[in-house]
Length: 443
Image (cartoon, rainbow, N blue to C red; front, side, top):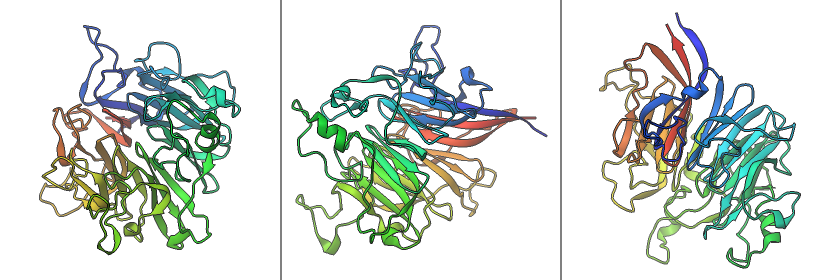
Protein backbone atom coordinates (compact mmCIF):
# COMPACT_ATOMS: atom_id res chain seq x y z
CA UNK A 1 0.00 0.00 0.00
CA UNK A 2 1.41 3.37 -1.00
CA UNK A 3 0.71 6.92 0.06
CA UNK A 4 1.06 9.08 -3.02
CA UNK A 5 2.34 12.67 -3.06
CA UNK A 6 1.70 15.20 -5.77
CA UNK A 7 4.06 15.85 -8.67
CA UNK A 8 7.67 16.66 -7.81
CA UNK A 9 10.44 18.24 -9.89
CA UNK A 10 13.69 16.31 -10.38
CA UNK A 11 16.83 17.84 -11.90
CA UNK A 12 20.43 16.79 -12.52
CA UNK A 13 23.46 17.90 -14.52
CA UNK A 14 25.38 21.16 -14.61
CA UNK A 15 24.22 23.82 -12.17
CA UNK A 16 26.73 26.53 -13.02
CA UNK A 17 23.95 29.06 -13.66
CA UNK A 18 21.54 27.84 -11.02
CA UNK A 19 19.45 25.94 -13.58
CA UNK A 20 18.99 22.95 -11.25
CA UNK A 21 17.15 24.91 -8.58
CA UNK A 22 19.34 23.39 -5.86
CA UNK A 23 20.67 26.63 -4.41
CA UNK A 24 24.31 27.11 -3.39
CA UNK A 25 26.77 25.06 -1.40
CA UNK A 26 28.69 26.23 1.69
CA UNK A 27 31.21 28.00 -0.54
CA UNK A 28 28.38 29.92 -2.22
CA UNK A 29 28.84 28.07 -5.49
CA UNK A 30 26.01 26.62 -7.57
CA UNK A 31 25.88 22.88 -7.13
CA UNK A 32 26.15 20.28 -9.87
CA UNK A 33 24.13 17.11 -9.37
CA UNK A 34 25.37 13.87 -10.89
CA UNK A 35 22.25 11.82 -10.17
CA UNK A 36 18.52 12.65 -10.14
CA UNK A 37 17.48 14.70 -7.12
CA UNK A 38 14.19 16.28 -6.10
CA UNK A 39 14.09 20.10 -6.01
CA UNK A 40 13.31 20.59 -2.32
CA UNK A 41 12.05 24.14 -2.77
CA UNK A 42 9.12 22.80 -4.80
CA UNK A 43 8.19 19.83 -2.60
CA UNK A 44 4.43 19.24 -2.41
CA UNK A 45 3.68 22.04 -4.89
CA UNK A 46 1.93 19.61 -7.23
CA UNK A 47 4.06 20.12 -10.33
CA UNK A 48 2.58 18.88 -13.61
CA UNK A 49 5.02 19.90 -16.38
CA UNK A 50 8.63 20.95 -16.88
CA UNK A 51 10.79 22.47 -19.62
CA UNK A 52 14.58 22.77 -19.61
CA UNK A 53 16.23 25.48 -21.70
CA UNK A 54 19.80 26.37 -22.49
CA UNK A 55 20.64 27.58 -18.98
CA UNK A 56 17.27 27.92 -17.25
CA UNK A 57 14.26 25.83 -16.25
CA UNK A 58 10.51 26.37 -15.97
CA UNK A 59 7.85 24.21 -14.34
CA UNK A 60 4.07 24.40 -14.03
CA UNK A 61 1.86 23.40 -11.12
CA UNK A 62 -1.41 21.52 -11.56
CA UNK A 63 -3.16 24.74 -10.56
CA UNK A 64 -1.48 26.61 -13.44
CA UNK A 65 1.27 28.64 -11.74
CA UNK A 66 4.69 28.95 -13.43
CA UNK A 67 7.98 28.70 -11.54
CA UNK A 68 11.37 29.50 -13.11
CA UNK A 69 15.04 29.45 -12.12
CA UNK A 70 18.49 29.67 -13.70
CA UNK A 71 20.28 32.21 -15.87
CA UNK A 72 18.34 35.46 -16.28
CA UNK A 73 20.98 37.50 -18.12
CA UNK A 74 18.73 37.76 -21.17
CA UNK A 75 15.37 37.63 -19.41
CA UNK A 76 14.51 33.94 -19.69
CA UNK A 77 13.53 33.63 -16.01
CA UNK A 78 11.00 36.43 -16.37
CA UNK A 79 10.85 37.85 -12.86
CA UNK A 80 12.73 39.66 -10.11
CA UNK A 81 14.25 37.95 -7.08
CA UNK A 82 17.14 35.49 -6.87
CA UNK A 83 17.53 33.89 -10.29
CA UNK A 84 18.79 30.56 -8.97
CA UNK A 85 15.83 29.98 -6.66
CA UNK A 86 12.59 28.44 -7.92
CA UNK A 87 10.09 31.30 -7.68
CA UNK A 88 6.74 32.06 -9.26
CA UNK A 89 6.42 34.18 -12.40
CA UNK A 90 3.68 36.79 -12.15
CA UNK A 91 2.18 39.35 -14.49
CA UNK A 92 0.02 42.45 -14.28
CA UNK A 93 -2.13 40.85 -16.97
CA UNK A 94 -5.01 39.15 -15.11
CA UNK A 95 -5.36 36.64 -17.95
CA UNK A 96 -1.91 35.20 -17.25
CA UNK A 97 -3.36 32.37 -15.23
CA UNK A 98 -3.96 28.62 -15.39
CA UNK A 99 -0.90 27.85 -17.50
CA UNK A 100 -0.94 24.30 -18.89
CA UNK A 101 2.36 24.08 -20.80
CA UNK A 102 5.70 25.91 -21.03
CA UNK A 103 8.65 25.81 -23.42
CA UNK A 104 12.19 27.06 -22.76
CA UNK A 105 14.47 28.27 -25.52
CA UNK A 106 18.06 29.40 -25.16
CA UNK A 107 17.16 32.74 -23.56
CA UNK A 108 13.37 32.88 -23.55
CA UNK A 109 10.32 31.13 -22.13
CA UNK A 110 6.87 30.77 -23.66
CA UNK A 111 3.70 29.56 -21.96
CA UNK A 112 0.16 28.65 -23.00
CA UNK A 113 -2.88 29.08 -20.76
CA UNK A 114 -5.99 26.98 -20.37
CA UNK A 115 -7.82 29.65 -22.38
CA UNK A 116 -5.44 29.07 -25.31
CA UNK A 117 -3.45 32.31 -25.05
CA UNK A 118 0.35 32.43 -25.29
CA UNK A 119 2.67 34.53 -23.12
CA UNK A 120 6.39 35.06 -23.61
CA UNK A 121 9.39 36.63 -21.87
CA UNK A 122 13.14 36.81 -22.45
CA UNK A 123 14.88 37.28 -25.79
CA UNK A 124 16.08 35.79 -29.06
CA UNK A 125 19.62 36.05 -30.45
CA UNK A 126 20.44 36.12 -34.12
CA UNK A 127 23.57 34.62 -35.68
CA UNK A 128 25.58 37.70 -34.76
CA UNK A 129 24.44 37.73 -31.14
CA UNK A 130 22.08 40.68 -31.52
CA UNK A 131 19.16 40.53 -29.08
CA UNK A 132 15.51 40.80 -30.11
CA UNK A 133 12.10 39.98 -28.62
CA UNK A 134 8.47 39.87 -29.67
CA UNK A 135 6.84 43.09 -30.82
CA UNK A 136 4.32 44.98 -28.69
CA UNK A 137 1.27 45.87 -30.77
CA UNK A 138 3.34 45.05 -33.88
CA UNK A 139 5.51 48.11 -33.34
CA UNK A 140 8.94 47.43 -34.94
CA UNK A 141 10.60 49.79 -32.45
CA UNK A 142 9.75 47.45 -29.57
CA UNK A 143 11.67 44.36 -30.75
CA UNK A 144 15.15 45.48 -29.72
CA UNK A 145 16.40 44.02 -26.46
CA UNK A 146 14.78 41.65 -23.97
CA UNK A 147 11.38 41.53 -22.28
CA UNK A 148 11.79 41.00 -18.54
CA UNK A 149 8.19 40.10 -17.68
CA UNK A 150 5.49 38.03 -19.44
CA UNK A 151 3.47 39.68 -22.17
CA UNK A 152 0.77 38.22 -24.36
CA UNK A 153 1.63 37.00 -27.85
CA UNK A 154 -0.77 38.66 -30.26
CA UNK A 155 -2.38 36.27 -32.72
CA UNK A 156 -2.30 33.08 -30.62
CA UNK A 157 -5.80 32.49 -29.27
CA UNK A 158 -6.64 28.78 -29.28
CA UNK A 159 -3.37 26.98 -28.56
CA UNK A 160 -3.30 23.63 -26.76
CA UNK A 161 0.46 22.99 -26.83
CA UNK A 162 3.53 25.18 -27.14
CA UNK A 163 7.21 24.40 -27.69
CA UNK A 164 10.39 26.45 -28.02
CA UNK A 165 13.57 26.09 -30.04
CA UNK A 166 16.72 28.09 -29.48
CA UNK A 167 15.19 31.27 -30.89
CA UNK A 168 11.72 30.38 -32.13
CA UNK A 169 8.38 28.95 -31.02
CA UNK A 170 5.66 26.63 -32.31
CA UNK A 171 2.06 26.51 -31.09
CA UNK A 172 -0.31 23.64 -31.86
CA UNK A 173 -3.90 24.83 -32.15
CA UNK A 174 -7.16 23.25 -31.11
CA UNK A 175 -8.31 23.02 -34.73
CA UNK A 176 -5.17 21.08 -35.77
CA UNK A 177 -3.30 24.10 -37.08
CA UNK A 178 0.20 25.25 -36.22
CA UNK A 179 1.66 28.74 -35.79
CA UNK A 180 5.36 29.62 -35.58
CA UNK A 181 7.28 32.80 -34.81
CA UNK A 182 10.74 33.95 -33.70
CA UNK A 183 13.97 34.27 -35.65
CA UNK A 184 13.76 31.94 -38.63
CA UNK A 185 17.23 32.28 -40.09
CA UNK A 186 17.55 28.65 -41.23
CA UNK A 187 13.97 27.74 -42.13
CA UNK A 188 12.88 26.59 -38.67
CA UNK A 189 9.63 28.56 -38.91
CA UNK A 190 8.48 26.17 -41.65
CA UNK A 191 6.71 28.80 -43.71
CA UNK A 192 9.06 30.28 -46.23
CA UNK A 193 12.55 31.64 -46.88
CA UNK A 194 14.41 34.03 -44.57
CA UNK A 195 14.15 37.74 -45.14
CA UNK A 196 15.97 38.96 -48.26
CA UNK A 197 17.58 41.64 -46.09
CA UNK A 198 20.44 39.92 -44.25
CA UNK A 199 20.41 40.20 -40.48
CA UNK A 200 23.23 42.53 -39.54
CA UNK A 201 23.78 46.15 -38.77
CA UNK A 202 21.09 47.34 -41.22
CA UNK A 203 18.03 45.63 -39.79
CA UNK A 204 14.74 45.58 -41.61
CA UNK A 205 12.77 45.85 -38.36
CA UNK A 206 9.40 46.07 -40.07
CA UNK A 207 10.16 42.97 -42.11
CA UNK A 208 11.31 41.09 -39.02
CA UNK A 209 8.00 41.83 -37.32
CA UNK A 210 5.81 40.88 -40.28
CA UNK A 211 7.74 37.85 -41.50
CA UNK A 212 9.37 36.44 -38.38
CA UNK A 213 7.96 37.76 -35.11
CA UNK A 214 4.28 37.50 -36.02
CA UNK A 215 2.70 34.03 -35.45
CA UNK A 216 1.75 32.60 -38.86
CA UNK A 217 0.71 29.15 -40.17
CA UNK A 218 3.29 26.72 -41.49
CA UNK A 219 3.40 25.51 -45.08
CA UNK A 220 3.28 21.75 -45.76
CA UNK A 221 5.01 20.91 -49.03
CA UNK A 222 3.04 18.69 -51.45
CA UNK A 223 0.06 18.41 -49.10
CA UNK A 224 -2.34 18.04 -52.07
CA UNK A 225 -4.36 21.08 -51.02
CA UNK A 226 -5.41 19.19 -47.89
CA UNK A 227 -4.51 20.85 -44.59
CA UNK A 228 -2.83 18.23 -42.36
CA UNK A 229 -4.18 18.00 -38.82
CA UNK A 230 -1.29 18.53 -36.42
CA UNK A 231 -1.23 16.26 -33.34
CA UNK A 232 2.26 17.01 -31.97
CA UNK A 233 4.90 19.72 -32.36
CA UNK A 234 8.53 19.72 -31.25
CA UNK A 235 11.49 22.05 -31.67
CA UNK A 236 15.15 21.28 -32.06
CA UNK A 237 17.59 24.12 -31.60
CA UNK A 238 17.13 25.28 -35.20
CA UNK A 239 14.68 22.79 -36.70
CA UNK A 240 10.97 22.12 -36.42
CA UNK A 241 9.33 18.69 -36.17
CA UNK A 242 5.61 18.00 -36.60
CA UNK A 243 3.40 14.92 -36.42
CA UNK A 244 0.28 15.42 -38.52
CA UNK A 245 -2.56 13.40 -39.98
CA UNK A 246 -3.40 13.73 -43.67
CA UNK A 247 -1.78 15.81 -46.35
CA UNK A 248 0.50 14.06 -48.83
CA UNK A 249 0.38 10.92 -46.66
CA UNK A 250 -3.36 10.41 -47.09
CA UNK A 251 -5.19 9.81 -43.83
CA UNK A 252 -2.32 8.27 -41.86
CA UNK A 253 0.12 9.99 -39.55
CA UNK A 254 3.16 11.61 -41.09
CA UNK A 255 6.27 13.33 -39.76
CA UNK A 256 7.21 16.69 -41.24
CA UNK A 257 10.37 18.71 -40.61
CA UNK A 258 11.99 21.99 -41.65
CA UNK A 259 14.99 24.12 -40.75
CA UNK A 260 18.69 23.48 -40.35
CA UNK A 261 19.83 20.19 -41.88
CA UNK A 262 23.63 20.36 -41.79
CA UNK A 263 23.88 16.97 -40.05
CA UNK A 264 20.81 15.36 -41.59
CA UNK A 265 18.66 16.19 -38.56
CA UNK A 266 15.61 16.63 -40.80
CA UNK A 267 15.73 12.92 -41.64
CA UNK A 268 15.53 12.94 -45.45
CA UNK A 269 18.22 10.31 -46.00
CA UNK A 270 20.30 10.18 -49.15
CA UNK A 271 20.00 12.36 -52.22
CA UNK A 272 17.87 10.75 -54.96
CA UNK A 273 19.25 8.89 -57.99
CA UNK A 274 22.75 8.66 -56.57
CA UNK A 275 23.21 12.43 -56.69
CA UNK A 276 25.85 14.26 -54.66
CA UNK A 277 25.97 17.77 -53.29
CA UNK A 278 28.51 20.42 -54.28
CA UNK A 279 31.02 18.93 -51.84
CA UNK A 280 30.60 15.42 -53.24
CA UNK A 281 28.48 14.06 -50.39
CA UNK A 282 25.51 11.72 -51.09
CA UNK A 283 23.56 12.66 -47.94
CA UNK A 284 20.67 15.11 -48.06
CA UNK A 285 21.88 17.97 -45.84
CA UNK A 286 20.01 20.81 -47.53
CA UNK A 287 18.03 23.12 -45.25
CA UNK A 288 14.26 23.27 -45.75
CA UNK A 289 12.26 26.48 -45.39
CA UNK A 290 8.83 24.80 -45.41
CA UNK A 291 7.70 21.57 -43.78
CA UNK A 292 8.52 18.44 -45.77
CA UNK A 293 7.47 14.87 -44.99
CA UNK A 294 9.93 12.15 -43.94
CA UNK A 295 8.68 9.39 -46.23
CA UNK A 296 10.73 6.72 -44.42
CA UNK A 297 8.49 7.10 -41.35
CA UNK A 298 5.20 6.67 -43.22
CA UNK A 299 3.12 3.84 -41.78
CA UNK A 300 5.05 3.69 -38.52
CA UNK A 301 2.36 5.58 -36.59
CA UNK A 302 4.80 7.96 -34.91
CA UNK A 303 3.37 9.11 -31.58
CA UNK A 304 6.14 11.27 -30.05
CA UNK A 305 9.05 13.27 -31.41
CA UNK A 306 11.73 15.75 -30.33
CA UNK A 307 14.88 17.48 -31.54
CA UNK A 308 18.22 18.50 -30.05
CA UNK A 309 20.94 20.77 -31.34
CA UNK A 310 21.51 18.75 -34.51
CA UNK A 311 19.76 15.43 -33.98
CA UNK A 312 16.21 14.08 -33.64
CA UNK A 313 14.30 11.23 -31.96
CA UNK A 314 10.84 9.73 -32.37
CA UNK A 315 8.70 6.86 -31.07
CA UNK A 316 6.60 4.60 -33.30
CA UNK A 317 3.31 2.89 -32.54
CA UNK A 318 5.07 -0.27 -31.32
CA UNK A 319 7.20 1.57 -28.77
CA UNK A 320 10.40 1.59 -30.83
CA UNK A 321 12.75 4.57 -30.65
CA UNK A 322 14.33 5.99 -33.82
CA UNK A 323 17.16 8.52 -34.11
CA UNK A 324 18.88 10.50 -36.85
CA UNK A 325 21.19 13.48 -37.31
CA UNK A 326 24.47 14.21 -35.56
CA UNK A 327 25.94 11.43 -33.46
CA UNK A 328 29.57 12.20 -32.58
CA UNK A 329 28.75 12.46 -28.87
CA UNK A 330 26.80 9.22 -28.89
CA UNK A 331 23.46 11.00 -29.09
CA UNK A 332 22.08 8.62 -31.74
CA UNK A 333 22.42 5.66 -29.38
CA UNK A 334 23.03 3.07 -32.06
CA UNK A 335 26.79 2.87 -32.61
CA UNK A 336 29.74 2.02 -30.37
CA UNK A 337 32.04 4.16 -32.50
CA UNK A 338 31.16 7.82 -32.87
CA UNK A 339 34.02 9.63 -34.63
CA UNK A 340 34.05 13.39 -35.14
CA UNK A 341 31.48 14.42 -37.72
CA UNK A 342 29.53 11.17 -37.50
CA UNK A 343 25.86 11.49 -38.49
CA UNK A 344 22.95 9.54 -39.96
CA UNK A 345 20.64 11.33 -42.41
CA UNK A 346 17.94 8.64 -42.17
CA UNK A 347 16.06 7.39 -39.09
CA UNK A 348 17.64 4.28 -37.53
CA UNK A 349 16.22 2.14 -34.74
CA UNK A 350 17.72 2.50 -31.26
CA UNK A 351 18.10 -0.79 -29.38
CA UNK A 352 17.14 -0.37 -25.74
CA UNK A 353 17.98 -2.86 -22.97
CA UNK A 354 15.08 -4.99 -21.66
CA UNK A 355 12.85 -3.64 -18.87
CA UNK A 356 14.74 -3.29 -15.59
CA UNK A 357 12.68 -5.94 -13.78
CA UNK A 358 13.79 -8.61 -16.29
CA UNK A 359 17.21 -10.26 -16.73
CA UNK A 360 19.66 -8.43 -18.96
CA UNK A 361 19.60 -11.27 -21.48
CA UNK A 362 15.80 -11.17 -21.77
CA UNK A 363 14.45 -10.88 -25.30
CA UNK A 364 11.54 -8.73 -24.12
CA UNK A 365 11.95 -5.22 -25.51
CA UNK A 366 11.46 -2.03 -23.56
CA UNK A 367 8.58 -0.07 -25.05
CA UNK A 368 9.15 3.68 -25.17
CA UNK A 369 6.35 6.06 -24.19
CA UNK A 370 8.02 9.42 -24.70
CA UNK A 371 11.34 10.96 -25.76
CA UNK A 372 13.18 14.19 -25.06
CA UNK A 373 16.34 15.59 -26.61
CA UNK A 374 18.77 17.81 -24.77
CA UNK A 375 21.33 19.73 -26.78
CA UNK A 376 23.46 16.63 -27.30
CA UNK A 377 21.87 14.00 -25.07
CA UNK A 378 18.56 12.17 -24.73
CA UNK A 379 16.09 10.80 -22.21
CA UNK A 380 13.37 8.24 -22.92
CA UNK A 381 10.58 7.07 -20.64
CA UNK A 382 9.25 3.54 -21.08
CA UNK A 383 5.94 1.89 -20.27
CA UNK A 384 7.64 0.17 -17.32
CA UNK A 385 8.65 3.46 -15.64
CA UNK A 386 12.26 3.01 -16.75
CA UNK A 387 14.26 6.02 -17.91
CA UNK A 388 17.20 5.50 -20.27
CA UNK A 389 19.69 8.25 -21.11
CA UNK A 390 22.60 8.51 -23.54
CA UNK A 391 24.78 10.95 -25.45
CA UNK A 392 27.03 13.73 -24.20
CA UNK A 393 27.83 13.20 -20.54
CA UNK A 394 30.62 15.59 -19.59
CA UNK A 395 28.17 17.95 -17.87
CA UNK A 396 26.50 15.16 -15.82
CA UNK A 397 23.19 15.59 -17.67
CA UNK A 398 22.87 11.81 -18.16
CA UNK A 399 22.44 11.27 -14.42
CA UNK A 400 24.69 8.21 -14.14
CA UNK A 401 27.11 9.78 -11.67
CA UNK A 402 30.07 10.21 -14.02
CA UNK A 403 31.28 12.77 -16.54
CA UNK A 404 31.20 10.27 -19.38
CA UNK A 405 29.51 9.99 -22.77
CA UNK A 406 27.23 7.03 -23.33
CA UNK A 407 26.97 5.74 -26.90
CA UNK A 408 24.12 3.38 -26.05
CA UNK A 409 20.98 3.80 -23.92
CA UNK A 410 21.77 3.23 -20.25
CA UNK A 411 19.25 2.68 -17.48
CA UNK A 412 18.97 5.54 -15.03
CA UNK A 413 19.02 4.13 -11.50
CA UNK A 414 16.04 6.01 -10.14
CA UNK A 415 14.52 3.72 -7.53
CA UNK A 416 17.39 1.55 -6.41
CA UNK A 417 18.07 1.79 -2.68
CA UNK A 418 15.06 4.01 -1.96
CA UNK A 419 12.28 3.48 0.55
CA UNK A 420 9.93 5.20 -1.86
CA UNK A 421 8.95 4.76 -5.50
CA UNK A 422 9.39 7.54 -8.04
CA UNK A 423 6.82 7.15 -10.80
CA UNK A 424 8.13 9.26 -13.68
CA UNK A 425 5.56 11.29 -15.58
CA UNK A 426 7.74 13.45 -17.86
CA UNK A 427 11.40 13.64 -18.94
CA UNK A 428 13.09 16.69 -20.42
CA UNK A 429 16.60 17.40 -21.72
CA UNK A 430 18.18 20.86 -21.62
CA UNK A 431 21.41 22.48 -22.70
CA UNK A 432 23.62 21.01 -19.97
CA UNK A 433 21.05 19.58 -17.58
CA UNK A 434 17.94 17.40 -17.43
CA UNK A 435 14.63 17.50 -15.62
CA UNK A 436 11.75 15.17 -14.78
CA UNK A 437 8.33 15.27 -13.17
CA UNK A 438 7.57 12.37 -10.84
CA UNK A 439 4.95 11.20 -8.36
CA UNK A 440 6.50 9.92 -5.14
CA UNK A 441 4.85 6.87 -3.63
CA UNK A 442 5.74 6.00 -0.05
CA UNK A 443 4.95 2.75 1.73
